[in-house]
Image (cartoon, rainbow, N blue to C red):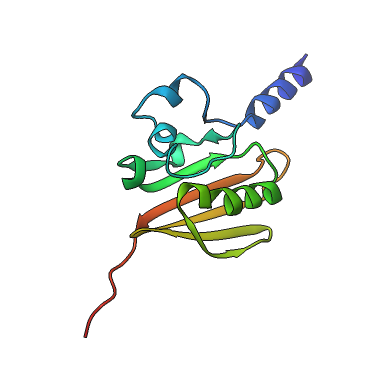
Length: 140
């Protein structure tokens, strides 16, 4: 009896918290996923990790950090962000694929960095998208 309780407790601890992008919160215009939906490609089935997310603004003017539990593996996530960002107006500046992958994009006067962390079977794949205004070059 006690072992069944421990197994069920362990399974509950393995679930990925967060808000699915296609649930009612996604239709809330104040939800982070709704505020960035038209500006950055997020793999379908991903879940927003709200406790690690801070989005200010919306549309093409948002800045901040969007943290996601991904529904795809690290390689497919990398390819998705790399290939789909262009259709959202982002230009790939650099990319590096590995256990921790990093993609950097530019759009107008903003930059975006996508950090993809290849987790274990319990944690899964996580992506953190950070968008910020580009620094203005110093003049002499």
